[in-house]
Amino acid sequence: MRLEITCDDRLGLCQDVLQILRDREIDLRGIEVDPKGKIFLNFPELEFKDFQHLMPEIRRIPNVKDVKTVAFMPSEREHFEFSLLLNKLPDPVLSIDARGIIDIANDAAGLLLSDTREHLPGTSITQWLSGFNISRWLERQPTEPQLSQVTINGAKYFAELMPIWVADEHDKTSFAGAVLTCKPQPLSSQWQRTGQHDAFHQLLGEHASMKRLLKEARRMAELNVPLLVQGETGVGKELLARACHQASHRAEQPFLAVNCAALPDNVAESELFGHGKGSLGPHTEAKKGIFEQANGGTVLLDAVGEMSNGLQAKLLRFIQDGKFRRIGEEQEVAVDVRIICSARDDLQDRVEAGSFREDLFYRLNVLTLLLPPLRERKSDIPLLAEHFSLQACQRLGRSLVLLTRDCRELLQRYQWPGNVRQLENVLFRSLSMLEGDRLEAADVYLPEADGLHENVAVDLEEGSLDEAVKKFESTILRRLYPSYPSTRQLAKKLGLSHTAVANKLREYGIGKQRRKSVAKS
Image (cartoon, one colour):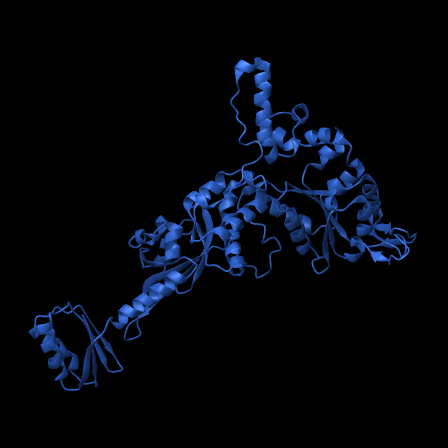
């Protein structure tokens, strides 16, 4: 039962109220005094006969104007309001005392740390976080906020710790702990210590191979020579090329990308080098090509291995001289562009197959960056998954969705033949169909790679041992090929020579060899 007493301020008024409760042996659970002339009482429910005598007795106290029952105390209302606001926040928020023990945790923190916030209060924050010594930070009784990278369930977060100092009536302050918020963004502007924009900030990765790649890319970005970026589909080759442009002295100039595989041979030369007036027909106007439009900047030739032989020859001359002729014109045009090429497969394989000019390959292969596939840096999957889930939630206009532990484990087990792009698309699709605020493993749709369902078991009753071995070998190669489209990569995986693997793929009609045989027939 709760009472609200409206009164004028008078010394000893509260004592008179409490005396009545003592005389009637009523157990007081709480009392709150509002400076605006209200006293709130909280005590157990009374029988009606006791309650009807209590109310008039309180009203007879001098300076008391009114007494009525209320549904809640002011502190109870504030508590529920605070809890509602806290649990609506998309970011995990925790309050810890000076010893690092969790006092309060919102729903987002519970889902992130332990799948339920009820398990968190009373436990040490160090039980859930690693990567930063919070206990030592608390011992120093800090006065300034601290931003630090931490690891939670294998995923990287940026934790902001804000110290709590409480003042008494004499304005003497005491250290009471801290409030901790976890930001799921892999990178934030606050984290940029140099205060300068990092052109490579979108290329996320903590794996040693990615750190080494980005270190090399930062150096190569400053050089004014051709750059070759190789990697499987979906690894982020264009993202890396664009970052190299932004990190170079050409950053303020145009960056233009053209997909060589998407351009038919009859229009590719015109798109790249331009054409003169009337050269393609009596009514065609003169047009500048990609290289002229990007003068002073960078041109990315995506899927350069798909370029025709004739176009390769003209590109080679342009790289050598920095000049070219538009279609239908005799005058040479000189432009200053940096050429970055990307290739999905190993260009060396195409050179050996005779489909790519060897002299052009060595012109383009001055500087090379090889982006590792996602399956070779699985420790980066939690970091990328958190980043893409945050982006998807922002695009969908919904509150933050937290990935459960079984969901993260599923993502790390998958081979990702489509690499980072596939991970991003899978998470966007899963989150767009999700109704709750937790992404479980069952909510994630992961298509199996071609041939993954093919049975490895071999029936020896239906053929010789040699036939059984070949069938088994063919099955293994069909399973692995989608994840290792380059024969050199597949050979390295199997511990065989490049020639041996190429011969086996050709023998079993797998990959490019299979497509060629179908085309001939």
